[in-house]
Amino acid sequence: MQERGKFSNKIGFIAAAAGSAVGLGNIWKFPYETGANGGAAFLLIYLLCAFVICMPIMVAEIAMGRHARLNPYGTFKKLGSRTWGIVGLIGIISGAVILSFYNVVSGWAFGYFLQISFGNLLQEADFSAFFTRYIADVGDNLLYSLAFMVLTAAIVLGGVQKGIERWTKILMPLLIVIMLILIVYGLTLPHAGQGIEFYLVPDMGEVTANTFYMALSQAFFSLSLGMGALITYGSYISDDDHIVNSAALVTITDTLIAFMAGLMIFPLVFSQGIEPGSGPGLVFVSLPGIFEAMGPGIGNIIGGAFFLLLCFAALTSTVSLLEIPVAFITDQYKISRKKAVIGLATLIFLLGLPSMLSQGAVGWLSEFVSYGGKSHDFMTVIIDIFSDIGLPLGGLLISIFVAYRWRMHNFSAEVSKGNPGFPGSRQEKFVSIMLSYVSPLVIFFMLMVIIMEKFFEVDILSYLF
Image 1: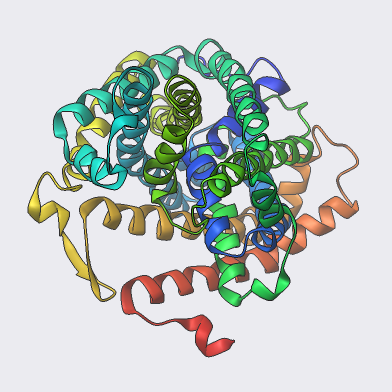
Image 2: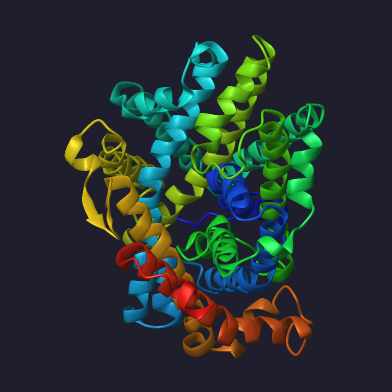
């Protein structure tokens, strides 16, 4: 039996787990969600959701993984039953499918980095038209996404310490340094103060029920909960590690990166008079215009640095997404890490081709199916099912499993290994209440809202508020 990998120390685990959580969702999605949902008010609610609702589930995932020392499927099966193992298997499949389209978007970011740094992207007359043409260009996208998958596989191939831990320790500080440089630069621009005011001065009159829903959704997904990534990483940590403190540090790091992303982007956006709620195109369509306005040279440097940052953020997540199925294959079938990584990376890359082709290259994939009153491309369908539905479902089932199948006394015993004062403490009472009652109810409600709105055009929130 081959020896399982492990992190060398607590810092290695926190860097890897934070890297798993930090990704395109923090740098790309969080700013446009904040811009579209009230600015500073959304930020406050997002932080509340991350620490109150989501962090207890993170503690549960890490504790499950450390106790079982297995992948998500093996963990649910060992602590529960073969039937519960299906929950872990769903998480593994969700992670693999999410990686298939995540890698495509990562390829876009890598291509933009090259096009801005060494190409003529900033000389385009219409950035929206360029982006539409760009994502439909199979040649470039195939090359860039393949390069990204090869890099991801190379890091995972190095194992837990020499691959994942070593590179996340390098990439995470680099990511923060680049963000700080862009933040400082953005604060020097005209009208940057308006962006800071929008982002940091709450206007609670802008808050609606939908604001709470979107903030909770963003917090849940940005922390990589529900698909077994933190169960997998938890299986590599020492019994002496303080799980609650580690989960708190991962949550703090993840939310700090998201906060910094807003601090970086909103001064840039307001300096050019761009609408902060302009949606998903904020990064790929709006920001190139800002970099162009900076002038030749400085615009290429700042723009290239931004998309390099986006690549770093994406890479720390793609590494963890690939590690989930790799751990499953090596644990359950005793296949070597090398064979598992090469085989799975190839399979997942091929699985991502329909998502790549659905952005305008192939007509029937670009209008794959209709629901919720409109047509959706293949990538959107995959995101709706495996991300927007699959991850909340995984989080819901993890809460139920720990509270009512594994039982809270077993959970507390595991957490107390690195934290002797946990049993009977306020921490234990808080986590127990959240896992047993609050988190499952809130996530179930969120899941129902997502399903009814996305697939049946029924806005539950409008009926309740």
